[in-house]
Amino acid sequence: MIHLNGPTHPTPTDQTGPRWTVGEVSALTGVSVRTLHHYDQIGLLRPAGRSDGNYRLYTPGDLTRLRRVLTWRALGLPLSRVADVLDAPPEQERGALHAQATQLRADLRRTQHTLRQVQARLDALNGRAEETIMNNEDIKAAFDGFDPAPYETEVKERWGDTEAYRQSAARTAPYTQADWQRIRAEMDAITADYVALMDAGVPPTNARASAVAARHRAHISGAYYDASPTMMRGLAQMWVADDRFRRSIDRARPGLANYQGRAVTAWADAQDRPA
Image (cartoon, rainbow, N blue to C red; front, side, top):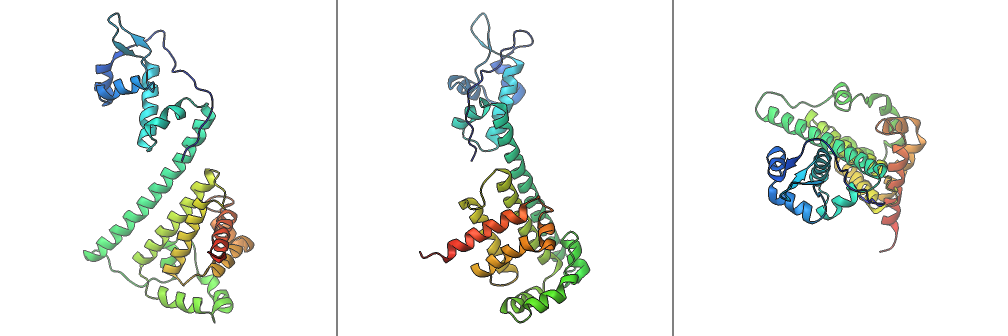
């Protein structure tokens, strides 16, 4: 949700330059005459000029404002809020646009990963690709450079006797390349949502961050092992305390390991409180 406050700024009035009638603006932009009349009536876009016959005449400045209106409408902002955004100080609109751009990039990455996942499955079903069990090199490629081999000995020493390790080993053993691509896409989407919250200034203890942390836990439980709140709290501590994990996570955004660690800890603490 976008919150912008501040003094309003009137639409710039061009004293010279071209003018367009409402019909011409409609033909140029694809916005209906009825919609343009409505924007005028509610004060969202009042044309700066009038003809001798009192017909609306739009200036280049008016068309610039119309483009901004359409941008925010495309982003899903209610019409009742668009004027607040357009008339806010530039630095506030700039911040809101940065947050929107971050979210759009996250959505784009999610869509691209999902598309690759769907295409990989289609190729397998159509016989153009064979789903094979992945080795470490395959996993390294699928996970963009992460190689699990150096950690396998340490993982076995630290967790080899745990139920979580046995669950993870059993679940991941039959995974194909398409499976790992799906898992990577899910985690990328979660990471993108953490980053979007960071960029928007949402505290890691906020309910929105806790919702992402809950998805993070569901992802781990679905792909690897049943992760209790206590285990998630331990993972959160490891992400920050272990330089290797912190550096890997912070590749997406500096400070991300600390942010998601605090979000997961807050989520875990909430699960332990009496209902």
